[in-house]
Structures are given as C-alpha cells and as structure tokens.
Length: 415
Image (tube, rainbow, N blue to C red; front, side, top):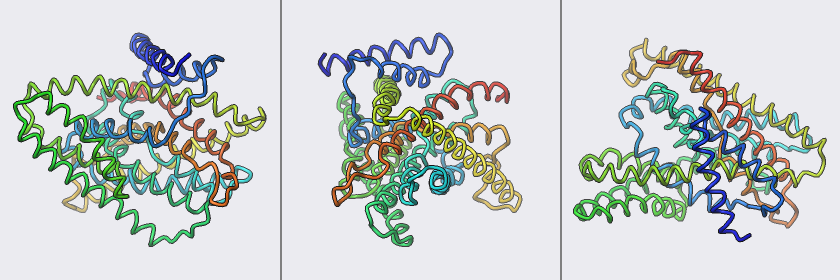
C-alpha cells in the first residue's frame, strides 16, 4: 500500500473518531491517541517515522499563530505574571525535578542524560491543553493562562533541551553563558516576530480589495516567520507567537468583518486537521517504540518509571501554581500596581490549571529527534529508553489527565 493511501486512510479514521468522540462525550484527543495506538499494531502498516524538523515546520507555526491570534490580548497582559512564571520558571523547575528523579531511579541515567529527559518532558502542549479544555466552560482567565503558558513554554523547553544534549556530547555547560543565550533567543524571536508583523500589516494595507490574497498572506506568514527566525538562530516559537499577538491587535483595523469570518472558517478546518493528525501520530508511535525495547520485563520497568515521572511533574506543577496563587495575593495586598484583582487566582482555577499540564507533540518530536550517535560515532546512550519513557509520559498525561479533567471541572462546579 502506498504512502498516499495510508495518509488518506489515517485522515479518514481521524475524522471518523472525532465525530464519534463528540457523540460519546469523550475528549477527542484521548480517542484519537487510543485509535492511533490501535492502528499502530496493524501488521500491514509500515513504520511511520516522525521527522522533528517537519513536525516543527508544518505543525507549530499555524497552531501557535492561530492560538495567539485568537487569544484575548487584554487577558494575556493582565495575567502575564502567571503566564511567565509557568512558561519559564516552571519549565526549568520541572526539568530539574524530573532529572533528579530519573538519575536516582533509572539505571544508567547519568546527570546529562537525566536532564535531557527532563527537558523533553518539561513543557505542556498548547494543542492538548486547548483541545481537551474546549467545551468545559472554564473561566476565560483560566483558558488564557493555559493557552498563554503553552504558547511560550515550548521555547524554554527547546533551550533547556539544547543545553542538555550539548552536555551529553561533552560540551561544557556554563550557566551565565546559557542565560545570555536564552535571553538572546527570546529577544531575537520577539524582534523577528515584530518585524514580520509590520511587513504583514504593510502588505495587507495595500491589498485590501483582494480577499483571496489577504487570506493567503495570513496563512503563509506564520511559516515564513518561523523559518526566518530559525535561520537567524533565534526562537521561531516566540517569533510566531509575537506575530499572532500583534496581528490580533490590528485585525479590527486591517481586516474587514466579512473577511475575518471567511478566514476563521478556513483556519478552523486547517487547525482541526492538524490537531487530529497530531494525536493520531502520537498514538502511532507507541507500537514502533515498543519494538526497540526487546525485553517485556524492561518495558514494564520503564512504564513504572514513566508513571513516577508523570506524578513528579504533576506535583511540581501543583506546587508552583499554588505558590503563584499565594504570591499574587501577597503582592495585591501590598498594593503593587502590576498585580490587579483580575490577576488573582482562586483555589478552583489553580487546581484546574495544575491538572491541565498535558504533554504532547512537541515533547514527542524532541524525543524522537535525539541524535542517533555522538560526535565520535558511538551510539547516543539510553536513546531508546528516553524515547520510550517520553512517549509513555505523553500518553499518561493525555489519557489520564484528559479523561479526568472534565470530571474534575464538574466536581468543582466551575461557573
């Protein structure tokens, strides 16, 4: 069977499962992941390998841009303190926490390898968070925080991952140099996103009468922005997010209402297909990763390690979210102008935010993108173990937290 036929079959299954998920009131990412796992065990299916560069180029730009474009800029600005805390400090805290657990729990996991695993699983996934929380009638502030966090934290995780892999390959890690590079990547991404937004605004202002051209430029610009940023060795994620946030502010001036509705319909179809493919691909990877582990006993051990790492990440997230809740309340009582009453977190929303930290396609792509060999030609140590544990943690968070989150929202009686 040709590759095109396989892609068409997977797309048809994805659309059918999405429709079924709506009928049985199940979060569609969960059903798609389970469907992908089942499909992956079919004997006629060839090995579907994921190219991380293709994943980042094809999936990230449109998904990030669409989420940033539709986010409430006012809510984003109000909750920037919480978003920044979760997207930056929590990412590095989770990296360290998982690294410590992995080092002392998994045989053969040196400190550099442990930090590689921690960096892979440090960031939540924007697609998973928005897809599973959609339709749960959460407060707008909660949705903005979750979307804002997952828009930015991919950049933090990718930086942590690069330094961890460099440590494995023998490059000396220097904290102050790493900090400067991190700031440079973020600042460079902001600058590229700002410049590309100005270019897009300039173009849209001159083709106002041609709806087809406007929509085409809006679809193309996220990809161009990402590629330009990565070629300049700055954060493509931050560049695309910046582009989306700026265009969200100017869309009312530059884009007529009728055209916005037309563009929205096109984006909804694209995002639906991309989201569905992502979750199917996540499920498809498990059977092929399992084949790289030759012992059933070792497989069970790794599943146990993945479960403990999942719990570790969840507890760290809960601790950081509730600490942020306390810090915001203290700052508000002291009368700090940057913290308004609208930025405060209550217990229910803090718990929802804590429980919504699902991992997804970015963690999976980073894991599969691990180098096969080191610079001297020797195999990358514990590569199969790291990939397998990463896939299982992604599945635990998507299925476990994805299935229980609607129940938790119902129990908390969120209004």
